[in-house]
Image 1: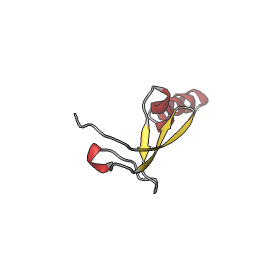
Image 2 (image 1 turned 90 degrees about the vertical axis):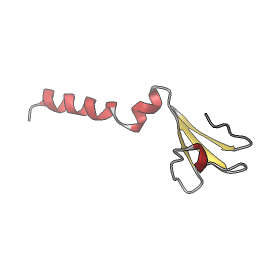
Image 3 (image 1 turned 30 degrees about the horizontal axis):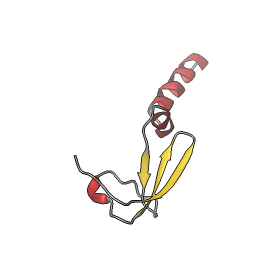
Length: 68
């Protein structure tokens, strides 16, 4: 495999990484055990959550929630 092909594959792999997702403005929310919270029903009032965004994380306590 030549260097050009490897570079192309590396770029494609990065484009689907969670880091690239965060760079596009999305966030990943986890509970205290590190489980990703995927649904509003997974989150409880007064629960501590870690929100990963581009450049770092925010630790917060949920005070309210709204379903769509």
